[in-house]
Length: 507
Image (cartoon, rainbow, N blue to C red; front, side):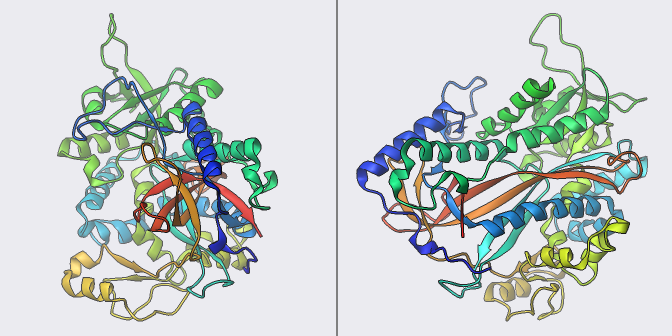
């Protein structure tokens, strides 16, 4: 779509007094409203204290980032299609075995993926006792100009689709509220006609994500059961998780128990008859607390190899998969979020396999499939013949030097785990004022902003009303914006400095 908005002129310039005023208002709002991180321990190798005594505001942007209204609406609309797509991918064992498995796919070269896949295969061989699955997703996008410069046609291009630990929903909601507050309190000093109330889209992500967890809990159907949050040790982003916990308790009367994999190794038991997952909390009271039945497992850990420092941690993850609790995500749904799956979906006929057939058969028409494809960049598998493209959206460009080097030096087995993706080119010259705790006032920098749209899907075992495994109960539940500096305009901001942001809609 063509946009009349000039991205290189954003954000509007501020005087020093205006910048100081906005920085003070933003940081005090963040500290007052739970837009927080835990500080790094000192020294950094030290563990976080069991009861924190201090917090810092999360890194943030003073201005929301511009997104064309039509592209923002498209991202929200397509989330519901993506919810269905990835739910169906997770239910397709043959497809995941071929793409991500340790016999044919990525798991042969990637030990992390292979270990998870082998655990899932063992669970299947024993018999899956909980067919219901919950996905709390986030589809991440960049605006793309194709490198054509100012006035170029803007497109919405997907960076990745997250199926595990899709974080920053609650903090993103609070970042959006902070920008609305700055507008309400200062009017942003009248520096831009775009900064008006109807250009700040609503963001109710916390309620939406918590509703998904509550629906899974209700589907489990055991009074007194609780939801387990599997968390990383020394988690600094704890407030993002706590806001979900508070929402579940206050709005749904559902209790949450938080444990790491190491703690779960000592506390988990599975009833041999019902396969219920039972957690025994630490015996901090007398008499010792009784075991808690878990309805739903929400993984905020387990998505990177460093979350499994010992074989015992993998064994704990597989034990959780064997239980009757509803997993968010299950191992197959986690595997569905792999980049190799994203690449495989671009091959001819694959998208039709999962979404085709029209409404009569639970699918979508050609126009919707083309709209989904339009969000993809070209992707190429490194294990295929040189020059062979696996995308249906664009012809294969000349291979970049990095891809050629990787192909030359990687073994045939290693290449199965890697893909090359065409470069997304965001609008050049877009800026922001970035603020981080202890970093002084807002620093103006050229930036790249990434839009994430959240979705939920409860599926498998007749989740859509008991009529069949393939039905998906889903919806779009919110969004986030993250911004990082690409270079310094006025000094001091390194590439990769990421902050929480929000959206201002533009023409």
